[in-house]
Image (tube, rainbow over all chains, first blue to last red):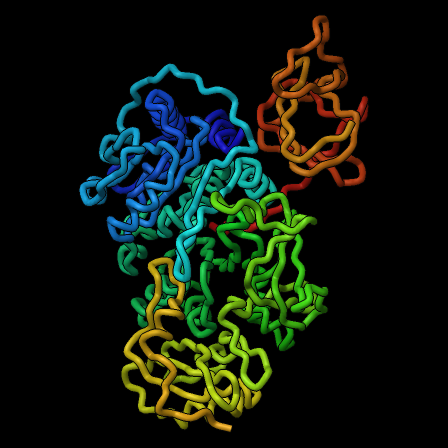
Length: 503
Length: 100
């Protein structure tokens, strides 16, 4: 038995509670199970061995996930923003897929011969066809979800998440049935691991999943108010846009008790402005990777309040941390020779636990012999076990033999009142090996200069953490899921060759 | 008996079904009879033992005396979950904030 047990339990406890809505459809828990059962029967009848999903957020997402789980085939939500060619390549890598998608997305695809059936999402979620196929018991070691990594550096890799890993994640971190009247607003796309986590955790909690197809700050706020949303998850770029749209006014969302953020680095000024705009909302920072079945560390609402009200700089800096590991997950910081590092030392983050997959469709498991997974994030732990993420190991700048995390420089520069956003990367330098380049988006009325920025950083951080070169840009490139596209930026800005590194 | 994470078990004398969330070692009984694997058939002639008929609730978690084991009720029934004859203590819910 796999993740469908989560839905079965919810149906048995409150079949008539609303499980999902998207502005067009509304299904109770019982209706969701029936719709999933119908889709499972169709997958079985067509001989499908996987389910591809090419669509925006809608009530079809949980139907597809549970339908695939019941049928014993992996659910693969694809990034619908990819080109038709790129999507066709990914669909071509799937084993006998049934392709479920939005009609405007499907028409652009060529679809290979391996596709067993194409189904329009418009035909899903209506009254149940009342299928009478009863699926065999699920093998909990089988993959239930396969997510393709974004593939910015190489061909996308298919990350396999098995029933027992996702079950471990939910059962270790979520309590059953939070009660009636709870609504969670989902604005992360279905192909993001948090989109998968949202389905499983909110269904197990008995909340209503409210799906937003296209995020905008105003639509998000309107939806929170009109549906009396009680919890939501956003990426930092979404939260920044919501806070900007409020223009200093309070958000006026009395129903919203929990707001989680994650998926990318959160600039402290954005977080502080958000906490001010949402005074009655508890903030949660969630850190995790696709390969770890979503969240592995959490900075709780209490942690946020403690950090903001503390005079102790060690407690206060935890506002910028990813919090502590969730139950069942262990973490270690390791040096270049894989030796264990102590509190305060930056190194590679390795994690272990029953929810950790580290398993790829093409290459198999990358866990070491003791079950540890290398996140490829650099991080450090404070004395209280709070985790601080310094950035991707690949992005680390080595300047004059010293390792510099771009995040360290960014967090200093972003505190300058004229700076709206900043990204830092390394570029080759004959004297230092690499020099640090800071690309800065200024606020509209700002007048500051490169010298001002460098002076600001020099007086607040070590000299090696002062950007060697400052470039002013109109905006920074982000993916729709809020990840800074550092490589793309590096390509457009280049090495700032006309400058020399400061000594 | 060793209970392994992810294992699904059922009562022989009532509707109770559980899943192991954290491994541990107890003589797990429900309603006075040893639990069996989810797919197995109950032994004939067993009945709910008086005094071990307090019932189980869906979504509740139970632990052992040392607080190591954790089992979750996935289907409720009339029996009491116990280590042999000793009822298992209920585990306090740990409220982690919603994170996705």
